[in-house]
Image 1 (cartoon, rainbow, N blue to C red):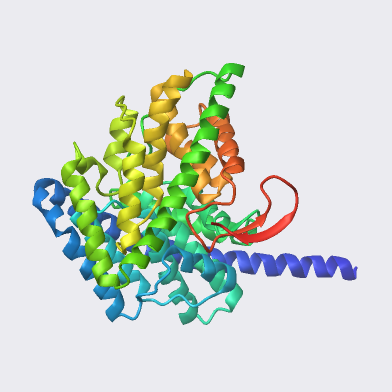
Image 2 (tube, rainbow, N blue to C red):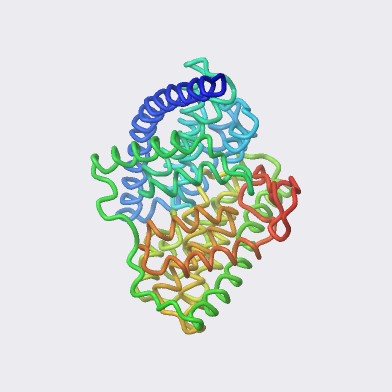
Length: 420
């Protein structure tokens, strides 16, 4: 009888927690989703302006200096970006509210001037800082504040990218590789869907996903080809991550002053964009380049150029995300190598996107869900296989240096080391 009473009490506590988190997560999704929609609109507006007035590319050095100066004046010159969000979840480290307006302004300015950067990584900081502030206002304990940060991450990512399931799982999976924060499953999913529905109601994500063409049938040959492409995408993801980390270190070594560093980086990116044929395709996140590649074009060197330009942009101190550039790199590599292996062009680009994203973020479940939400479920087994291979062979490299690799990728043992 005592055991039965205890079970009823536990069920009652779970029910109360469920209702509380549904309400909190819904509110978080609506508030963060609204800010993310405004962020999306601003990014879209400045991108259109850059297309109408190509001369704004000449503002890249000045834009970099303004961003660096703004962070310095706000006492955030040593800001760790998305890494701070990961630490806020894992260790409940304080995440200041001013992170949100700073990343909003600086990412919009980066896109206006044509820097090679995404927006979803910036959205993680935007949503995480807003949710962390809400947790402090509500006087939540440290554990609940960590769940709130994950809710903010999921809501912002979902509102911007239009992939609610992927966003919810990514917020739980990206912090500690090998450990999923299942306690946040309901809150993250509710916040993610709430943000997504708000974004849809405001006119975003009418057509979610990319047109990747007809995938191959599931056969022994297509599985072998997928494994081969997944293995090569693992190497590409390692190179992408290494370039991101190395560029920042090289900039710091040779140009210690952050304002001069950002201006110099802007000048380098500007020079490359002006020299390159169709250089405008490599500015911004790379969404337009992805659609062109999936539509049938092949540019064998595009993955190298996008990697270089993104490293030069973000390493110099410009703000933005790495996620869509990583997808762009994967798409460019996949559409080049996949057909050589005998895979369809569009499917190869889609698989490259998912596999490089997986290797760079160390999030295999998120990557499989991403491929499903972006490209449909017709070839989900092949996408899963490519992501699994890329995850295992990409080693312990990752975009985020504060990401913890808790369990080994090759043996069932605990290693607890940071991504490189």
